[in-house]
Length: 395
Image 1 (cartoon, rainbow, N blue to C red):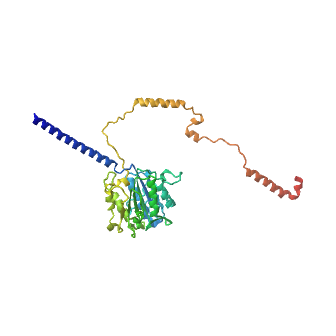
Image 2 (image 1 turned 135 degrees about the horizontal axis):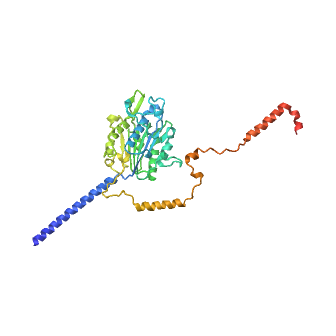
Image 3 (image 1 turned 135 degrees about the vertical axis):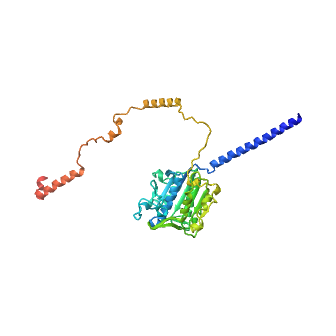
């Protein structure tokens, strides 16, 4: 009996340990799933895509921006969450042999202008002031929604810029420039005003790494096409158009993005390796010290896509309408209709009849200038006929 008792106690203890281990394992799995579900910490995505160059020979900069625009739209970011700024309209340029098109690949294989491009800032609207106002939200109240960056503290923002630059500046339309200090201060304003959760900054320009050297705000990851002292080179010359179609760095980044789909698990470390010096000629750079997460845990779609998180449930959800609720709402609607005053006869006319009604004829009154001119004509005829000597008989 004693041995049996000890044996049963031992079995009970082992079973308890097994249950405890299984319970902790299940708990850890649930925690891992929850961490995986909420690891990015963002609920919406935005993109600000900027081409700062004018003139036909800068065709490639417009193609760069439109190619990134095409990629983020394909991965799920809608036009309502994209602010597109193009300093020149290459599609309508008189030198363009194919009007209403912009190509990013030689032999005119891919038209990135498409049929549904929504340009928010174009031509001379693309200025340093407007760009900074978009980022910081300091825009006039009359500005339409499509020209606003309506982000919040749960927004992941992609900012892509391309154009001509130098050590610590990026030119806007050959007339002004933005410095790396101004850009860093704008990002700090965004952080203080809770306008982003995480921010990915990509720039394709000469000496591009100089533009992120002064950043000091948290949760910013930055990539550049070239180091300080290096040029960012063009790619794919097209004899039919007469210019280069893209820049090297953006070309290989977009070639990488073409393999990405909304469910991809590709991370940012893979993006860092897409354009080695053997391909880009320049040396691409990146900065991650301000970013809180490890880049290998940051998905490409955290910035280039807009993946909607879906929670799966085993509960049965009834899709049949509740008749009681429908009846009560119908009675409330009827009561509201009874309280409303009846419309007047003029307000009950169909819209088509109101539009096509003939206007009420108005009484004609001669304009004031007509009367004055008539009197002047009478006086002129009188003087021509009788002369000034007969004026004494009038007065």
